[in-house]
Amino acid sequence: MSIIRRDPFSLDVWDPFHDFPFDHFLSLAESRPSFVSETSAFANTRIDWKETPEAHIFKADLPGVKKEEVKVEVEEGRVLQISGERSKEKEEKNDKWHRVERSSGKFLRRFRLPENAKVDRVKASMENGVLTVTVPKEEEKKPEVKAIEISG
Image 1 (cartoon, rainbow, N blue to C red):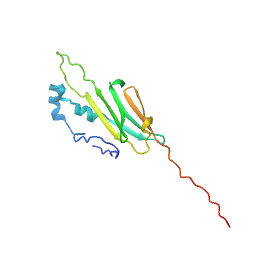
Image 2: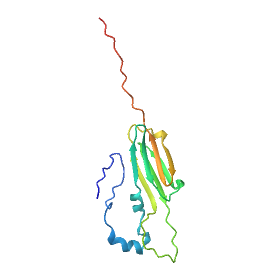
Image 3: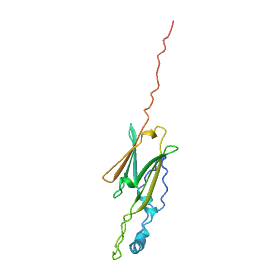
Image 4: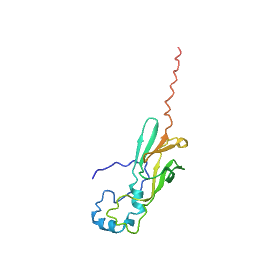
């Protein structure tokens, strides 16, 4: 099990079952496909956040999700919220499930943006199942240096 350092600005919900071996639940998941709940979809939406000199960039893998099913919002207090719903596959009466690993249901991730984020300039795009949210940064103001003439 690897230790991943959590970002201090993240408002993620702690997932106490992350990396927990669920092999003994396998028969339950096989017998009841609905065992994969909204909570697991919520917890399994992985998002990368990197900072460049120009922007904060968020990338989320959302395979099988259409851009119309995703919402990107900036809430009061500089909170970036990415949410949506992954549709459940239609079950046929005669289907026999052998394994259910893909999650369905609603997902929601929230991140508190730093002071230098231009929240009025956020852009989002989706290509090949990858959502990219770009939050431009304020330019760092360099301290103005004024030369003082020395008299005498």
